[in-house]
Length: 194
Image (cartoon, rainbow, N blue to C red; front, side, top):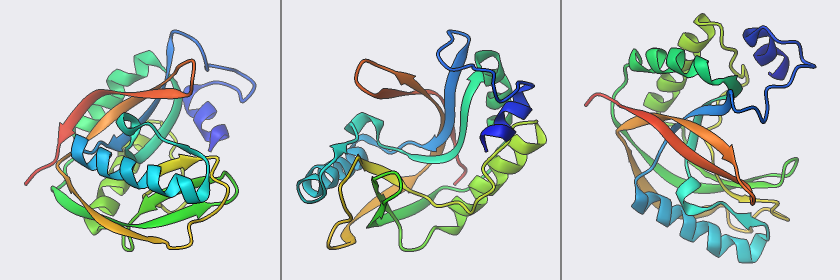
């Protein structure tokens, strides 16, 4: 994926755009309402006692649709234009599973079954982005909400109390470095149809 991203920007893989004021780390995401973020944050704090690690800050909790990486800031206008053309329906998700990726020690929340409207939204966004010269991950989409980083192990019980998340739109988000970790800032959001 990294090589494809560099290619789409006209850079060699040895070039660096990270850390420049002219670049931003960007991604499209579903951004939950504050009450959904708090409910997921409560799960993160509870499960941290069992699994260790560092809980994601509640205001940073989200579900990534398409990660774009470090891009020149002037490309955000193209992204906004593309996002404005995305059509989709509102839908509901029920977050009811906890999973663990051992390779990067991430504990995340997800769904037993990925909703069809979510799959269509991601596929449409990837098609538009690829058509505009951006390169997207070609692996099958796995909707996940990171709750813990550096977790030591998977939870004994992978089920969690279902959290209902009504999805009414999506956002373009910047991941900015801070002294301790990163902070996510919604740059712009778009509604989904009824």
